[in-house]
Each structure stands twice: as C-alpha cells, then as structure tokens.
Amino acid sequence: MTQEISRPRKKNPVLRTRLPTLPPAARSRIALGLTAAAAQGRFELQQCGECGSVQYPPREACQSCLSTRLSWKEQSGEGELLASTVLHHSNDLFFRERLPWRLGLVRLGSGPMVVTHLHGDVPAAPAKVRVAARLDRAGQAVLVALPDKETPHMADDRQLREFTCDPKFRKVLVTDGKTAVGQALVKGILKAEADLVWVGHAEPWKKFTGLDELQIIPQVTLVPLDLTDSKNVRELAAEIGGKVDILINNSEYHRAFGIANRQGVETARAEMDVNYFGLLRLAQEFGPAMRSRGADGLASAVAWVNLLSIYALANFPSHGTFSASKAAAQSLAQCLRAEMRPAGVRVVNVFPGPIDDEWNQLLPPPKIAPQSLANAVVKALRDGIEDVYPGDVAQEWLERWRDNPKALERELAA
Ligand SMILES: [Zn+2]
Image 1 (tube, rainbow, N blue to C red):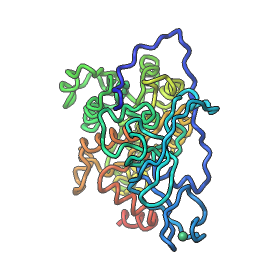
Image 2 (cartoon, rainbow, N blue to C red):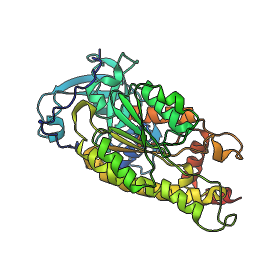
Image 3 (spheres, rainbow, N blue to C red):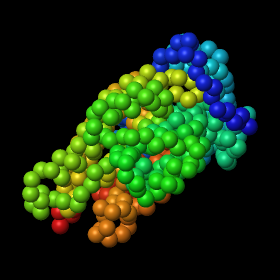
Image 4 (cartoon, rainbow, N blue to C red):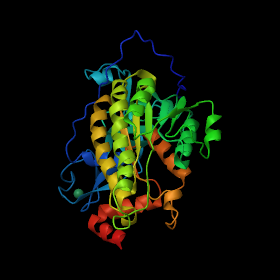
C-alpha cells in the first residue's frame, strides 16, 4: 500500500537547491502521436486499417502487414503484468536521483507488449493492471501501469508523483479571487489538500461577492494583484514568487463586442492588457523563480495553469476582440511552455467554452458552470494533463476545429 506523503518540512536555506534534470526526451515524429494524446489525458496507440492490429512502439507502417493505413485509437489500457523489476542503478541523471525505480512488462488486452513505469501498489506478476499514458517532466508521453482498482493514497506514489502536478501539500497562487471561477478554483484546490492558497484581488479596497467567505478560510491569504500594473506584479513576485508551486492565472477581461459595434480601441486594449500582457507580466516576474524550483523535492514548483478560451482556436465574432486577446495569450502560453519545460514545470492550458458568468448572459446554454471548470483544472493537475477542453461546448468545438477549421470559421460567423 502506498505510504501517505507527509507535509514537507521547511527547506534548509543552507542546502543547495537541486538543479532540475529531465528524463530522456528524444522521440520520433511518429511517436509524438502518443504525446499528443497524453497531453489531453488519453492513451492512444496506432491501429492498422488493413489488418486491425494494434501496435507499440509507434511506427511508420504496420508491423504485421506493412500497411501505412494507420490511425490513432484510444485504448482502455487493460492488461496483464507479466514481469517486473527494480532499477538500482542508472547512468541517466534524472533516474539516478530517483532510484530505486520500478518497471514492468505488460501485455495489453489489445495485443501489444509494453514496458512501463510501475506503480508501487501493483502486486508481483501475474497481476491485472491498467496502463495509462502520462507526460513526464520532459513533456513526453510515457506509459505507467497502475493497479487495477483504486488503492488508498494512490496518487502519493513516489514514482507517479513525478508525472503529475498533484496539488497536495503544494502552495498555490490563484490570480483573481473576485470571480465565481476564481472562488471555485480556490475551494477545489483546497479540497485537493493544497497547503495554502494566495488569492489575488485587483482592487483591494473594494468588496466583492464571496469575499467574506474567502476571508474565513484559514489557508487563504488575500494579496493585492493587478495584472495591468507591472510594479504590483513585480512586488508580489518578490514577496511570494519563490514559494509558489502552482500558479493559476484565471484573470481575464471580457466584453461581448465585435469590431463594428464599438468605437475606438479602449475595450480591446483593456482585454489585451489583462489577457495577454497580464500573462506576460506574470511570466516575466514569477517564471524565473518557479523555474529555479523545478526540482525542489516533494513540494517543488510543478505547474502553471492558464485560463484561456475555446475562442482562442477560432474567432467568435460576437466576442471578437476577446477571442483575439485569447488567441494571443495562447500563442504566448506556448512560448512559456517551451521556456518552463527545461525545469520540468508544466504549463497547463485550459480552453473552456462559454462560462456561465456575467459576460455570457445572452448566450443560450449549454454553458460551463464555474464549479465544473474548477473540477476540470484540479483533475488536469492530478493527472498531469497539459491541454484541457472542459465541458460539452469546448469538446464539440475542438472536434469541429480538428475536422475542418474553415468550416468552423464559417459556422461561427453565421
Ligand atoms: Zn496491418
């Protein structure tokens, strides 16, 4: 049974900070298909369109019939552990620091044999397991064999925690506590046993709905944070930047305008100032400190979450300038992801459809409830997912965008 982790002790400031190392990251272009699915929390393997065989590792052609008609299909991951071993030596710096390390050989129900990282609760072979694809600290997909059924404190497994961003015992900054989404995030993250949460509010002199409720939560500290104010962001980063393990940037400015129904650029600029430049300011001030703490033991800096929008994929003309600001933010988030990766800090982008809030009042349902959005963010952290499309609208929009971006553009304009 997994030993429950305990709250990490205060760091000894005299000890040197361990520099982040990454597991081997080289993959073929074909193998990135596995990573693309794992980034969204799915385990997919190639299946042959001619003979139907499922194969691993990913290849250019079917290993049974040499057909090139291969497509990626989601796998249940059910399989049987045939053998296991424990590594006690490795020349690889990443694994060397984390020995002993358990590995297994699994035959999947769908056919292929795979080598996997092995959860501590999986008994000796033969045993039923569930294989999942997870992203490792280098951002590449790896296979992990988990116990067939949920076990106590399963997420606390030392090896599994290397692939996830579990909030347990971590210190979290939620940049905007004023919105319903922000408040749901704070509660969700505390339910996931986060150690403490700093909650930003841009106008500390103003009362807002839900403020009283936030203030009485013992783990919550309210901090003044206005993403449009470079000096304010810098000051807060100087104060807490070195302690934040998970940063959730949920600040956004949203007005329902297109181009023609509004004079001037003030609204569009205000949206850019929070949604795009706000992210940039945060990244410049908090990024370096989080990067330096990517390997800081049990409670290292692990994740940066951006609340984007499904409108970042294709412009929704009635929310046109907002869509544009989110598209800009998505592009910047990709840059941030590339810069955080060497430290093993994961950038999680969240693409919700319309949220059931003030600025989407005129949109008909379905709209995602703040609570569901917060749950999706917590689940993404726990499972180590990189791209999240929570709710039916986001899922459908993603599907249509993948299928034909041009068709989606026309449909949204209609
Ligand atoms: Zn085949």
